Length: 247
Image (cartoon, rainbow, N blue to C red; front, side, top):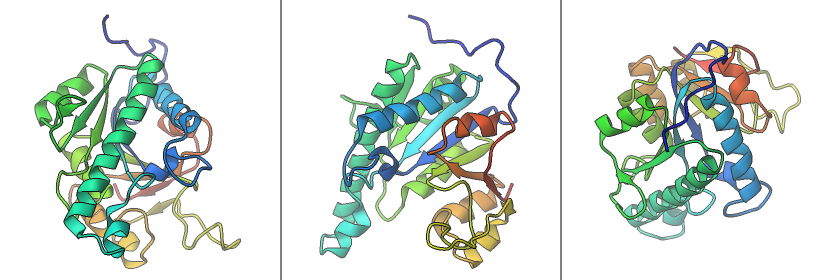
């Protein structure tokens, strides 16, 4: 069965290849833990809607809905072990997303920084690029394969390696605010913000290592709401509400 081709009458988009970064918590819906299949399905449909525009998409998904290494370390677990457990959680999330996407007819590959050949491919940069060129969605799992690095840093690293034109950071709010908009009614959203401002004001877009890596390679970060139906596609088509970091 050949890979699906993008829709012929798809509108022009600003970006041709992007990386979507979402947290593991985004997959658990209103539950306090684990995977919520309807939520996974909804996000997969958002990804498919952008894929149908002809955009090449890769993804990095966190593992905090199953296990977060830093929290395990805080509770007395040895940090390296806790981080490896967190990496394995990201593989579970990646496989769930792959299943949902393929159920929608989107050819998808899970590529892990920790080799586990029975369930996914090992990370080989040229092979991953080729998958993108063939219009497959590529999900990078297991972070960077190293402890002490977050999935934010892994996302920025992979986006640079894949020559992505932007990172799309899906969150629960429609951009970057000067303070928590849930707690403060007078919170103001940035239209654009510099990398250095994000670091200096501790705006919490991504961790400092990820922001610095994006800054050093002039890779823009688009922060938007993953909870807004059609939001991901809308931004690719030149609409919607979001904050652009750097670039």
